[in-house]
Image (cartoon, rainbow, N blue to C red):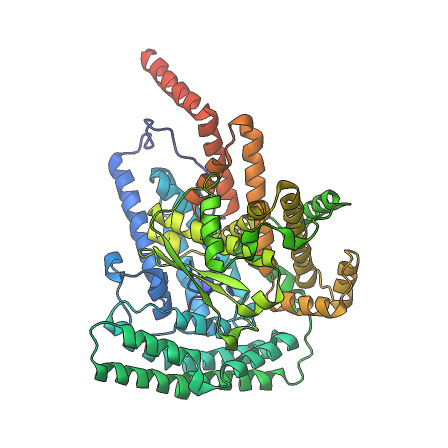
Length: 618
């Protein structure tokens, strides 16, 4: 199954685009101070065996995920041979109940093998990966009873929405990639037929998407198929073929003709057929509610948001967390006004490229720097403007991260203010996802870390970066107001997400909720209701992820006092890499000890104890 720009289904059921788990065997031990023995009475040979077994398991897992389909492999690594990866025949993968079940079985087997490895014998880096993998596999296995609750089609995050962008950004590194790409176009009918069958099976079980979601997917597919001969993928490939080195004129013309034929005769009909299938299934569909309107929907939502946000909190705890933050922001904002938003620094009105360059330089005192990194801004094709996110960052390959791409939706530009573009680029570029992904890749982490998605960790950081960006384009008083307003809005949408998808709010209840916050635009609230029910839990990735980061930051500030340095905290978070927040919290304790000097004191105490023990009589 193809990877996605944003999380659309649980990890155990999809190959990850690195652009989104508690085991009884989970090791809670931390790395010992340098110089102490991690082996205790266990032999070095046993440790070596455990470390080798774990590395083999991780490499097998990475190969399984990275090679799941051609698009995933193309995005994950530039040079598969360097990772011992076999390149399979071009495929978009499968999306069936059987394929989903098989993936869960694979993860269960991996979890069983993992439990046979003693984590206390692993290196410090391996222990962290062990904890992440163990917690992930246990959490994702729980989805085995909820296969048909998964929604592969939605207006913003569905496969049909993201496939054109993924095809448009497919990397052509060697001549065979040109042929593979064309063959992928020809596989769309098979994949979309499977999606239509899956949706029919969902309907038979009473789990079909909402009427709004279905109509939006239909309209999106029809819009994409509206003008086949002028589809942007045709002109895009023509440009690639014209510029690709080493091809004769005859070869270029033949490739361009094959690509055009595949788009017109296979890709476009696949979109039309999917629209027709969903239209037929939507006849008589009266479902208008969120996930909790389905039997078992609340339980699924809890699993979904834990897996997606990377937070182990219950939905009730998340709700309380957001209410407290919303109330705090509202109290701060009482009686305050940011004035005219257009009075922000002139840089907020600049071009995207100028804004990104400004942000890259302006954040230097608070964030680590990146050298030799390039980026470009691309714009979403008009046929997809009404359905895709306002902006998104494409995560680069594990071994080719110097060139980065940020997509902007022109429709969003026409509907929003200058400050939106500025902070959105902060979210996607510096100090957001571009910095986040490239910095971690520069640490040369184990390859497996790139195929386990952590959307709360990732989008929480994007939200954190977005809110931080206000201080770069406004004075302190104004930026504080704008930042608190942003936090208020994120919490508002997060609470609404829980209300619609967990607490069974209908549209009148959502209108009442927003009216209590002074929002009475009935049409806008109706759109929000449809959006939240289409992608349950998606807003929590941003809101809960952000609040978990703030909790880590406040913990470090309280513990370190005057020794706390914001840049150091940012380096800690980015260096740790994608993980569950409770794992990050444990790692933060070690980091605090190191910064405060307590780790050195513990190290001395350990050695003193060892010397004292050595002098005692046997």
